[in-house]
Length: 213
Image (cartoon, rainbow, N blue to C red):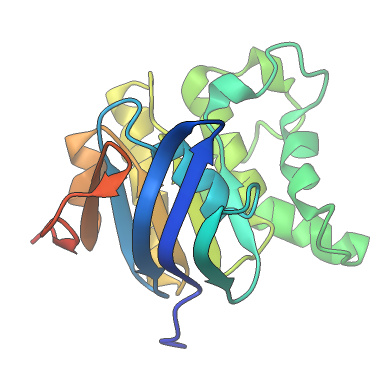
């Protein structure tokens, strides 16, 4: 396994208009490890996710990527009326990969099996339960084969069994060598992390970037 960090940040700062959101965020995401990101609403977690995923750029500080980033959004960000099957939603994750159709089909089938969605491939996405939708979105990220996987509160509003299945797959992806960042309010989610970072008012709370064990 390559031990080099897939994402490194140094003193990241970000603001919206005159409102400071993040201050001096320094962290690393490493292969085979899960970093938990916790904090109250408004602490800057979502903005940090956007920066780590490359969706926004910091005003100050540096961020370096080694390879692509796959982002798992909350299911509430996927339109309820999306007129696609489960398979089609998962396949969307291969669009930027520029790979042959046969390889894309194989990745889609493998990802759906990993998240327990086999047999539901041709069902409408909008007809799925909340847990099934979130697992579909996780599969969409997995097909990208990116070295970094970022999950933004993926179990919000899900039942206990759905949360368990999501967390199990996250642990397995880290074991396969992915670097993982998991934003979560859930104690059970943070418990699977190798390190947990607490954000408060846009800053890392001192001494929280430590192992959970």
